[in-house]
Length: 186
Image (cartoon, rainbow, N blue to C red):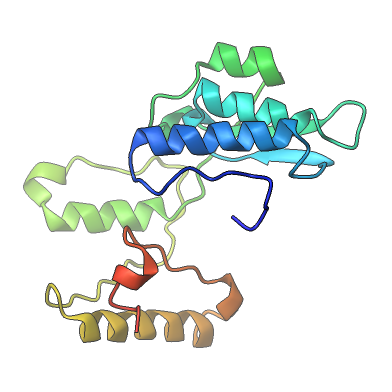
């Protein structure tokens, strides 16, 4: 947003806006407005569309190396969107690095989900290679109660910082709303 020679499309939450952002990234990369890179690392590559792969190629064209280093991590078991085919990814960037083990907190999350609806989710199981992970902690609050939301977030952050030794700079709050529309705006 701060680069004067890059035009960001008007705010919108739809697919057209997202596509326009990718196009702006491609144009900025081709114009050299983003600088040069030694390496490019792609995570969640299974969800990259062909248009997003065009952006990666545009970024790779401005690397400081004769041949750019691109690490493309890909987990077909985690595919959420209609991404580019495995063949297209391999044709553009070589063999993706396929994750063979998921080290997320899956076992405890799966057990928690089963407890929510044993009849419907009782057969849900984490693969045997999954770590147990930390127990799932749920803090409920009444819908629309901003003070309760702030209290819950404060307790979570305090626990992470004091009990698990997480640096405050490593904590990110993600919301479907813009900051000014959240209960945290004030």
